[in-house]
Image (tube, rainbow over all chains, first blue to last red):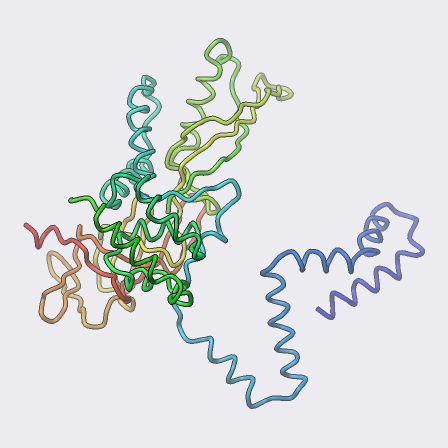
Length: 211
Length: 177
């Protein structure tokens, strides 16, 4: 980081006599606003910001000279922890999560459509389509996605995100313990959410398809 | 997990496909080109569900091909870390087992199989508990958690675990038979 700052300084010093080449001009314009550009970009990207914070903490630790305490702190997070489900953060723009039962409904509709459309023998249903249909056919435990949404939608008021909601619907949970095991991020809100979740799970179990 | 997404693609079409059926030709080419493909960012494109818009075509210099920007809606399947999937076991060996959940292949290492399950070699290799009450073998269904994904240009490969609460065998057709 200190190197970056140093480079910025050098280029800004160079920028005063640079009116010879367009390339240098470009560099100078970039380097004239390096502080703004760098800070803006770091500020907007959360992940980048976090890294800097972490590194700052480490630097602070070393500056304080806390040799004994800091290394212990760094070893603690190394314990193997199951990855938390954060699909919403990884989701691309313009995307909407689908529960397996919703996907099944859509894909079944398309399947019929494809059968009609495929006069062209060169159009074959791709392997991933068949795989996807197979997966949702046997994986989804509910036949009526609308009623599943109706049951789970109130959980959003209690901070349950769209991806968590779909995960609950896909897992077909029999108890709230099962939900908390699959979504450890919800354990922190357990006190607030346990009652509406219990109600939702009870209603879902009534909906469950008799396979 | 499945999701619905709007994607864009520049489609090149030969002039012989122009005419009254241009739109149909464009859509069928899009289906051929896109369905079944996989990208690391979006996952497997399972099916195109609709066309949002088709922009005006642009003739490519030197060729008769015309490029049309097409916006389309599609159903995509992508595994996420921490997600719970139900998968069918396809291969069992001493290193662990492979399973398939839709178009995705998942490997579960023997380190991520409960300690009380041991590998049994033979015609039908399997992992079995000491009391033989639970058996993981080919074609049985397991519920697993995705703990890692490796993204290729055309494939997504996952690593999973069944060493957690509420995970493991959910249906064994061999036992049921």
